[in-house]
Image 1 (tube, rainbow over the protein chains, first blue to last red):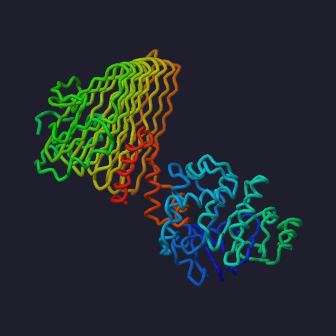
Image 2: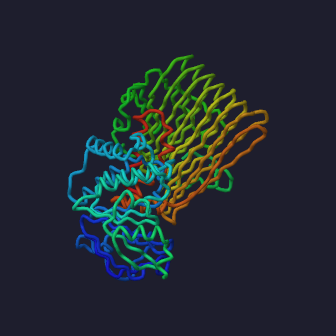
Image 3: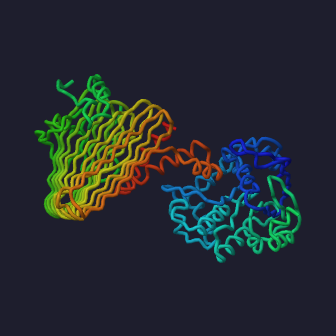
Length: 247
Length: 360
């Protein structure tokens, strides 16, 4: 589904990704772990197409398409969802309005009929209920006044409504208390654990992996994948710390 | 046009005023109206008045309790003092209500001057919706007087395709009375929205605010002063300016708190958004306080659309132009949210959307 080959990327002229390769197949959940500054968030943003995150070499294909050629909104319509570490607050736009615009923009781009107000509301309510988010929060401006945990739940509600093929979740576990962590973990499993979907979980800590069992764990350091393994690698890192990478 | 000394940019209070556009509009020839006036009224039940080039048109009006009268302008305001002659007036008795009064001003060219007068006795309630469409120079003086406990909601939209609209409001707000005037400048005309609000009763509330949207080489401005003369008064000035291309939007807002006007609660929020770096937003917040127990919050900022927010919307599948439009709409949303009646609020939001569709 996603094939990253020797990807290089820089921010403001500074190279952060230094030849990263990774392949994610449908039905798989991959965790990317690594110390601060290794390039984890840069990987997420580069795949999402954020301005200033400049790919300088290598290739990324998503379902056979050249991902790096697509604008951010086209990547979304192709089925890629980027979960933000720091979801942006947008005063003046309600969550519902925003999500209906988003979903219907994607549907139009795929030549699918847009959802009516009623159909959309039904879907949004179901997803909010499943994530334990008060439906009233959907009427409020996007992320404004939300706690860290509420913002992350909101990311998951968005993911549930949009229903992507591939979710790249950047530090979705940061800032979460244990209840929110559990809710978010269950959300990821419910929405994305499917034979035709895949997840790239970017995380610093192992704790989210107690709820979302990865099929593969990769360690990112200094812009490259330096080790790959099964779920046991996450436990080893948690026990030994990232210091073992130097050894 | 009227032979008189118009204000010049050398006068501090008129430094951003586009008097050249005003003169050009005044000198423009009259033409046949290209707009059906019926389309300019919102589908809300209530008194309706149509003025075409400043002249009352009974055929398209059903004024109800609103009277059409000859008036003399009692003001020293340089533009307001020109608004004499045929105009509208309404005096609402104690505890009476007249809502959804719609006044449409349609211009075809040249200059037009119309005075308006609204008096609300104790605990009277009114709401007024004004629409400016067409072209030419529309010059208006509106005198408002709210007695104890009276409430007025006024919504004014400027959607002339070109020309100039100059509005002068002079209001007195009595004890526990409430005046809210919200303006939307979403046409191609130049404008000057000029207000002087006096709170002269205990606990009075006065608000004047709105959104000015400019594009091309257009200039729009608002210049509002609120004066607190009695205790426990509240005033709000919430303005949003959006400027595209080489246009300029200017906001000057002033709060004066007289000696003894204790427990005044004043708030000014002036925010500008530049859609291109060639555009200009001027902001001038002013406070003049002669009482020691007052709360006056003020904020003035100019910026561009938040890049992070733009990327966030795009990452969810929204194309860049639509993302820009959504964020710009959101930027002006809190100013328009002050409009009390839902149907009016929606009509104004639709005007803002139409502006965005053409400007972006």
